[in-house]
Amino acid sequence: MPPSISQAVESFLSEVRFSPNTKTKSTYTTALTTWCKYLSFSGIEPLTSPLSLLQPDSVSKFLLWMSTPRKPSKTRSLQKVKQVLRYSPASLYVYQQGLLRALNYWRSKGWIAFSKEDEKSQRKAREIVSRKSQAHYSRRALQVPSDFGFLMIDAVNSIPLPDIPLERLEVLRSRALIYILFSTGLRISDACALTRQHLTTALENNGEVVVETKKTGNLTYSSFIPDAIRAIKAYLRARNDKFPSLLISHGRGHHNDSRLPSSRPNYGEPLSYTPAFLTIKLVGHKAYGSNAKLTFLGPHAFRHWYAQFLISQGVRLENVQSRLGHKSPVTTKEIYAPKPNAASLLSAARVLQVRLSEISDTKKGK
Image 1 (tube, helix red, strand yellow):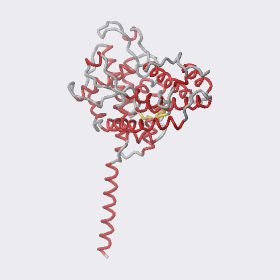
Image 2 (cartoon, rainbow, N blue to C red):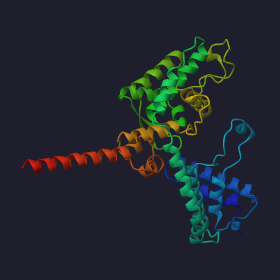
Image 3 (cartoon, rainbow, N blue to C red):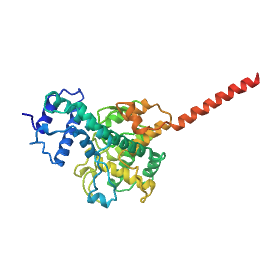
Image 4 (cartoon, rainbow, N blue to C red):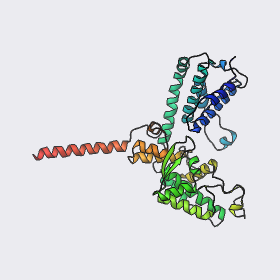
């Protein structure tokens, strides 16, 4: 008798040998959990439904569900946020790979009847949609203005330093965060995970530091420019504590709280994603105006801008890859450089013309 879907998932996760990187298993667990969530949404209960119910179009329908726009909640409606995708193109790819590997395992056990070819033919139609989705995100990346990073730095530096200790800390932390993202192109989650040890390493290596990314476990070879280091040091001096994180929570409570910031609940915990992203949005509206429609101001805005800046400066794609922590330069190219570097090509064309003119002049001189 075939197992239930939940039992099959548990069997796959417990019996399959994953790579030494434990985050691979964690990623596959998340992928299959999301798949089970989709099944429940579709009226199939994973705990009681047998695995034999699966059809060849299981993967394609799962991908379609993940990429279908959802209606914004009431809170988002108040913020005038348009429809958003359920999952990013990167998540679509990773979750698809997790489900495909699970299907191969279940097929080897004889728990599902349809072949790999049956499933693949059902998925072909979905691949066209995926390419369009990837193209959408590539275009979105290219829409980040070339002066974005510099305007954000000017905006955060223009915020005056208040006399109230907590408000002063908030401004200094905003400066440190913006300078870190400007200098490294890290994801927000990785920036929030930086510690004093990272700063010490950077100081010992001319600003260079290796950071393990939280999302994939890949290494990113980052660099803190001198101004970024000064902003971080100014924030740490104002904190005057020994907490290991470079960016910390300032605790719960009102801004006009008369207590010292360090006595507030949760003070000293690593800064979480939400307040970090809100800081970026606030500084962004200060840079471009409160009424500006900043469609590019997403969680990866700095990352897109940083990658595009490096590419525009002629940095080789594999070096951009190492800065961003991608496993393959193909990922870097698809997301951040889907089009040729026009500036580099124009420069090369000018060199060709100069060389050709020199040869022609030489022949005329003879």
